[in-house]
Length: 311
Image 1: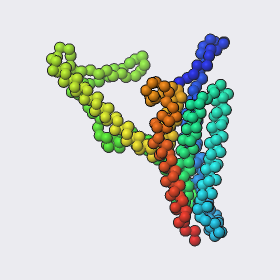
Image 2: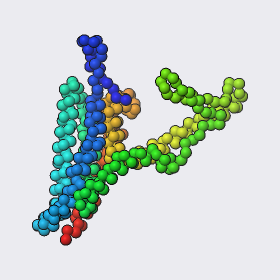
Image 3: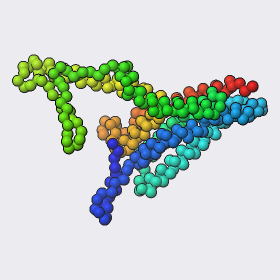
Image 4: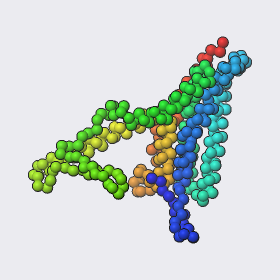
Protein backbone atom coordinates (compact mmCIF):
# COMPACT_ATOMS: atom_id res chain seq x y z
CA UNK A 1 0.00 0.00 0.00
CA UNK A 2 1.50 3.33 -1.05
CA UNK A 3 0.90 6.48 0.97
CA UNK A 4 -0.56 9.59 -0.63
CA UNK A 5 0.67 12.91 0.72
CA UNK A 6 -1.96 15.56 1.42
CA UNK A 7 -0.86 18.79 -0.23
CA UNK A 8 -3.69 21.02 0.93
CA UNK A 9 -7.23 22.08 0.15
CA UNK A 10 -8.62 22.93 -3.25
CA UNK A 11 -9.69 26.60 -2.99
CA UNK A 12 -12.52 25.97 -5.46
CA UNK A 13 -14.10 22.71 -4.34
CA UNK A 14 -12.75 22.63 -0.79
CA UNK A 15 -11.66 19.01 -1.22
CA UNK A 16 -8.23 17.63 -0.46
CA UNK A 17 -5.56 17.53 -3.17
CA UNK A 18 -3.41 14.40 -2.97
CA UNK A 19 0.11 13.96 -4.23
CA UNK A 20 1.90 10.63 -4.56
CA UNK A 21 4.98 9.82 -2.54
CA UNK A 22 8.37 10.19 -4.22
CA UNK A 23 8.96 6.49 -4.80
CA UNK A 24 5.45 6.04 -6.19
CA UNK A 25 6.60 7.90 -9.29
CA UNK A 26 9.77 5.84 -9.57
CA UNK A 27 7.75 2.68 -8.97
CA UNK A 28 5.83 3.53 -12.14
CA UNK A 29 9.11 4.13 -13.96
CA UNK A 30 10.27 0.74 -12.74
CA UNK A 31 7.25 -0.87 -14.37
CA UNK A 32 8.41 0.52 -17.72
CA UNK A 33 12.05 -0.42 -17.17
CA UNK A 34 11.12 -4.04 -16.45
CA UNK A 35 10.22 -4.47 -20.13
CA UNK A 36 11.75 -1.56 -22.05
CA UNK A 37 15.00 -1.56 -20.08
CA UNK A 38 15.49 -5.29 -20.55
CA UNK A 39 14.77 -5.00 -24.28
CA UNK A 40 17.27 -2.12 -24.51
CA UNK A 41 19.93 -4.24 -22.83
CA UNK A 42 19.22 -7.11 -25.21
CA UNK A 43 19.32 -4.80 -28.24
CA UNK A 44 22.71 -3.42 -27.20
CA UNK A 45 24.39 -6.80 -26.82
CA UNK A 46 22.88 -9.47 -29.06
CA UNK A 47 25.04 -8.64 -32.11
CA UNK A 48 28.22 -7.24 -30.57
CA UNK A 49 30.26 -10.21 -31.78
CA UNK A 50 28.02 -11.85 -34.36
CA UNK A 51 27.96 -8.77 -36.59
CA UNK A 52 31.76 -8.93 -36.72
CA UNK A 53 31.51 -12.59 -37.71
CA UNK A 54 28.92 -11.92 -40.41
CA UNK A 55 30.88 -9.04 -41.94
CA UNK A 56 34.14 -11.05 -41.79
CA UNK A 57 35.74 -8.10 -40.01
CA UNK A 58 36.53 -10.02 -36.81
CA UNK A 59 39.40 -11.89 -38.45
CA UNK A 60 40.85 -8.63 -39.77
CA UNK A 61 40.38 -6.97 -36.39
CA UNK A 62 42.17 -9.72 -34.48
CA UNK A 63 45.00 -9.83 -37.02
CA UNK A 64 46.12 -6.42 -35.74
CA UNK A 65 48.56 -6.23 -32.83
CA UNK A 66 45.88 -5.94 -30.15
CA UNK A 67 44.85 -8.29 -27.39
CA UNK A 68 41.52 -10.07 -27.53
CA UNK A 69 40.60 -8.93 -24.06
CA UNK A 70 40.89 -5.33 -25.21
CA UNK A 71 38.35 -6.01 -27.96
CA UNK A 72 35.75 -7.68 -25.74
CA UNK A 73 36.28 -5.20 -22.90
CA UNK A 74 35.94 -2.27 -25.30
CA UNK A 75 32.69 -3.63 -26.72
CA UNK A 76 31.32 -4.21 -23.21
CA UNK A 77 32.41 -0.76 -22.03
CA UNK A 78 30.71 0.92 -24.99
CA UNK A 79 27.46 -0.94 -24.37
CA UNK A 80 27.53 -0.24 -20.63
CA UNK A 81 28.18 3.48 -21.22
CA UNK A 82 25.23 3.70 -23.62
CA UNK A 83 22.97 1.97 -21.08
CA UNK A 84 24.12 4.29 -18.30
CA UNK A 85 23.38 7.37 -20.40
CA UNK A 86 19.89 6.09 -21.29
CA UNK A 87 19.14 5.23 -17.66
CA UNK A 88 20.47 8.56 -16.42
CA UNK A 89 18.23 10.44 -18.86
CA UNK A 90 15.24 8.43 -17.63
CA UNK A 91 15.99 9.13 -13.96
CA UNK A 92 16.62 12.85 -14.55
CA UNK A 93 13.37 13.15 -16.50
CA UNK A 94 11.45 11.37 -13.72
CA UNK A 95 13.05 13.64 -11.13
CA UNK A 96 12.06 16.68 -13.19
CA UNK A 97 8.44 15.51 -13.34
CA UNK A 98 8.52 14.94 -9.60
CA UNK A 99 9.77 18.48 -8.95
CA UNK A 100 7.11 19.91 -11.26
CA UNK A 101 4.51 18.20 -9.08
CA UNK A 102 5.98 19.97 -6.06
CA UNK A 103 7.57 16.87 -4.54
CA UNK A 104 10.94 17.72 -3.03
CA UNK A 105 12.85 14.56 -2.06
CA UNK A 106 14.20 14.25 1.45
CA UNK A 107 17.58 12.77 2.37
CA UNK A 108 16.03 9.30 2.73
CA UNK A 109 14.24 9.71 -0.59
CA UNK A 110 17.54 10.51 -2.30
CA UNK A 111 18.96 7.30 -0.87
CA UNK A 112 15.95 5.33 -2.12
CA UNK A 113 16.28 6.88 -5.59
CA UNK A 114 19.97 5.95 -5.73
CA UNK A 115 19.16 2.36 -4.72
CA UNK A 116 16.45 2.31 -7.38
CA UNK A 117 18.93 3.53 -10.01
CA UNK A 118 21.53 0.93 -9.04
CA UNK A 119 18.94 -1.86 -9.13
CA UNK A 120 17.63 -0.68 -12.51
CA UNK A 121 21.13 -0.61 -13.99
CA UNK A 122 21.98 -4.07 -12.66
CA UNK A 123 18.75 -5.48 -14.10
CA UNK A 124 19.41 -3.97 -17.53
CA UNK A 125 23.07 -4.97 -17.39
CA UNK A 126 22.05 -8.54 -16.59
CA UNK A 127 20.15 -8.88 -19.87
CA UNK A 128 22.95 -7.06 -21.70
CA UNK A 129 25.44 -9.62 -20.36
CA UNK A 130 23.14 -12.50 -21.32
CA UNK A 131 22.73 -11.18 -24.87
CA UNK A 132 26.46 -10.54 -25.14
CA UNK A 133 27.19 -14.11 -24.09
CA UNK A 134 24.75 -15.42 -26.70
CA UNK A 135 26.47 -13.23 -29.29
CA UNK A 136 29.73 -15.05 -28.65
CA UNK A 137 28.04 -18.48 -28.76
CA UNK A 138 25.73 -18.09 -31.79
CA UNK A 139 26.93 -18.09 -35.39
CA UNK A 140 24.72 -15.19 -36.54
CA UNK A 141 22.78 -12.29 -35.07
CA UNK A 142 19.36 -13.85 -35.68
CA UNK A 143 20.20 -16.97 -33.72
CA UNK A 144 21.73 -14.89 -30.93
CA UNK A 145 18.58 -12.77 -30.66
CA UNK A 146 16.32 -15.83 -30.57
CA UNK A 147 18.38 -17.49 -27.83
CA UNK A 148 18.40 -14.29 -25.77
CA UNK A 149 14.65 -13.72 -26.11
CA UNK A 150 13.97 -17.30 -25.04
CA UNK A 151 16.01 -16.75 -21.88
CA UNK A 152 14.32 -13.38 -21.31
CA UNK A 153 10.82 -14.85 -21.55
CA UNK A 154 11.79 -17.74 -19.27
CA UNK A 155 13.35 -15.53 -16.59
CA UNK A 156 10.73 -12.77 -16.69
CA UNK A 157 7.51 -14.75 -17.21
CA UNK A 158 7.85 -18.52 -16.91
CA UNK A 159 10.05 -18.66 -13.81
CA UNK A 160 7.64 -16.58 -11.64
CA UNK A 161 4.81 -18.86 -12.77
CA UNK A 162 6.86 -21.89 -11.75
CA UNK A 163 7.26 -20.75 -8.15
CA UNK A 164 3.49 -20.66 -7.64
CA UNK A 165 2.55 -23.53 -9.93
CA UNK A 166 2.02 -27.23 -9.39
CA UNK A 167 5.79 -27.91 -9.46
CA UNK A 168 6.44 -26.12 -6.20
CA UNK A 169 3.39 -27.86 -4.67
CA UNK A 170 5.07 -31.17 -5.49
CA UNK A 171 8.21 -30.02 -3.68
CA UNK A 172 6.51 -28.64 -0.57
CA UNK A 173 3.72 -31.18 -0.46
CA UNK A 174 -0.03 -30.76 0.06
CA UNK A 175 -1.40 -28.06 2.31
CA UNK A 176 -2.49 -29.18 5.79
CA UNK A 177 -6.13 -30.21 6.07
CA UNK A 178 -8.72 -28.74 8.40
CA UNK A 179 -9.14 -30.58 11.69
CA UNK A 180 -12.00 -33.04 11.82
CA UNK A 181 -15.29 -31.28 12.43
CA UNK A 182 -14.09 -27.98 10.95
CA UNK A 183 -15.22 -26.71 7.56
CA UNK A 184 -15.85 -23.48 5.66
CA UNK A 185 -19.40 -22.21 5.17
CA UNK A 186 -19.29 -20.42 1.80
CA UNK A 187 -22.01 -17.81 1.21
CA UNK A 188 -22.76 -15.52 -1.71
CA UNK A 189 -22.83 -11.78 -0.94
CA UNK A 190 -25.43 -10.10 -3.20
CA UNK A 191 -24.08 -6.62 -2.38
CA UNK A 192 -20.47 -7.13 -3.41
CA UNK A 193 -21.12 -10.03 -5.76
CA UNK A 194 -18.37 -12.03 -4.02
CA UNK A 195 -18.21 -15.15 -1.93
CA UNK A 196 -17.43 -15.07 1.78
CA UNK A 197 -16.33 -17.96 3.97
CA UNK A 198 -17.01 -18.55 7.65
CA UNK A 199 -15.28 -21.15 9.80
CA UNK A 200 -17.86 -23.53 11.23
CA UNK A 201 -17.19 -26.26 13.80
CA UNK A 202 -19.28 -29.03 15.20
CA UNK A 203 -17.96 -28.30 18.71
CA UNK A 204 -20.43 -26.29 20.80
CA UNK A 205 -20.54 -24.86 24.28
CA UNK A 206 -22.52 -27.90 25.45
CA UNK A 207 -19.66 -30.30 24.70
CA UNK A 208 -17.36 -31.51 27.45
CA UNK A 209 -14.23 -29.67 28.52
CA UNK A 210 -12.08 -32.49 27.13
CA UNK A 211 -13.66 -32.10 23.67
CA UNK A 212 -13.16 -28.34 23.73
CA UNK A 213 -9.52 -28.75 24.76
CA UNK A 214 -8.92 -31.33 22.02
CA UNK A 215 -10.49 -28.98 19.49
CA UNK A 216 -8.32 -26.05 20.61
CA UNK A 217 -5.18 -28.19 20.39
CA UNK A 218 -6.17 -29.41 16.92
CA UNK A 219 -6.75 -25.84 15.77
CA UNK A 220 -3.43 -24.69 17.20
CA UNK A 221 -1.59 -27.53 15.48
CA UNK A 222 -3.40 -26.80 12.22
CA UNK A 223 -2.38 -23.13 12.18
CA UNK A 224 1.22 -24.05 13.07
CA UNK A 225 1.34 -26.51 10.17
CA UNK A 226 -0.27 -23.95 7.87
CA UNK A 227 2.28 -21.30 8.83
CA UNK A 228 5.13 -23.76 8.29
CA UNK A 229 3.67 -24.75 4.91
CA UNK A 230 3.52 -21.17 3.65
CA UNK A 231 6.96 -20.42 5.09
CA UNK A 232 8.42 -23.26 3.02
CA UNK A 233 6.68 -21.98 -0.11
CA UNK A 234 7.96 -18.45 0.53
CA UNK A 235 11.53 -19.67 1.04
CA UNK A 236 11.53 -21.79 -2.12
CA UNK A 237 9.81 -19.14 -4.25
CA UNK A 238 12.16 -16.46 -2.94
CA UNK A 239 15.19 -18.60 -3.76
CA UNK A 240 13.96 -19.40 -7.27
CA UNK A 241 13.12 -15.73 -7.94
CA UNK A 242 16.73 -14.80 -7.19
CA UNK A 243 17.61 -16.27 -10.59
CA UNK A 244 15.31 -13.78 -12.33
CA UNK A 245 16.67 -10.22 -12.73
CA UNK A 246 13.14 -9.04 -13.44
CA UNK A 247 11.69 -10.51 -10.24
CA UNK A 248 14.58 -9.15 -8.18
CA UNK A 249 14.07 -5.67 -9.58
CA UNK A 250 10.31 -5.82 -8.95
CA UNK A 251 10.91 -6.91 -5.34
CA UNK A 252 13.32 -4.03 -4.79
CA UNK A 253 11.02 -1.38 -6.29
CA UNK A 254 8.01 -2.68 -4.35
CA UNK A 255 9.87 -2.57 -1.03
CA UNK A 256 11.30 0.90 -1.73
CA UNK A 257 7.85 2.20 -2.68
CA UNK A 258 6.36 0.77 0.52
CA UNK A 259 9.13 2.32 2.61
CA UNK A 260 8.66 5.76 1.05
CA UNK A 261 4.91 5.39 1.51
CA UNK A 262 5.25 4.65 5.19
CA UNK A 263 3.77 1.15 5.05
CA UNK A 264 6.93 -0.80 5.77
CA UNK A 265 6.55 -3.92 7.88
CA UNK A 266 10.10 -3.71 9.18
CA UNK A 267 11.89 -0.94 11.00
CA UNK A 268 13.59 -0.09 14.24
CA UNK A 269 12.21 -1.24 17.58
CA UNK A 270 11.35 2.33 18.64
CA UNK A 271 8.99 2.70 15.68
CA UNK A 272 11.23 4.97 13.61
CA UNK A 273 11.45 4.60 9.85
CA UNK A 274 14.21 2.22 8.72
CA UNK A 275 17.42 3.78 7.45
CA UNK A 276 19.41 2.98 4.33
CA UNK A 277 21.40 0.24 6.09
CA UNK A 278 18.17 -1.43 7.22
CA UNK A 279 16.93 -1.34 3.63
CA UNK A 280 20.19 -2.77 2.31
CA UNK A 281 19.95 -5.57 4.85
CA UNK A 282 16.44 -6.38 3.67
CA UNK A 283 17.47 -6.30 -0.02
CA UNK A 284 20.92 -7.84 0.43
CA UNK A 285 20.29 -11.09 -1.43
CA UNK A 286 18.37 -9.35 -4.21
CA UNK A 287 21.36 -7.10 -4.94
CA UNK A 288 23.80 -10.00 -4.64
CA UNK A 289 21.78 -11.94 -7.25
CA UNK A 290 21.58 -8.89 -9.53
CA UNK A 291 25.37 -8.60 -9.34
CA UNK A 292 26.09 -12.32 -9.71
CA UNK A 293 23.98 -12.90 -12.84
CA UNK A 294 25.78 -10.38 -15.13
CA UNK A 295 29.16 -11.37 -13.69
CA UNK A 296 28.55 -15.03 -14.60
CA UNK A 297 27.34 -14.31 -18.13
CA UNK A 298 29.95 -11.64 -18.85
CA UNK A 299 32.63 -14.02 -17.58
CA UNK A 300 31.25 -16.68 -19.92
CA UNK A 301 31.29 -14.23 -22.84
CA UNK A 302 34.87 -13.23 -22.00
CA UNK A 303 36.11 -16.84 -21.87
CA UNK A 304 34.23 -17.78 -25.03
CA UNK A 305 35.60 -14.81 -26.98
CA UNK A 306 39.16 -15.47 -25.83
CA UNK A 307 38.89 -19.03 -27.23
CA UNK A 308 36.93 -18.10 -30.36
CA UNK A 309 38.28 -19.63 -33.57
CA UNK A 310 38.16 -16.99 -36.32
CA UNK A 311 39.93 -19.00 -39.03
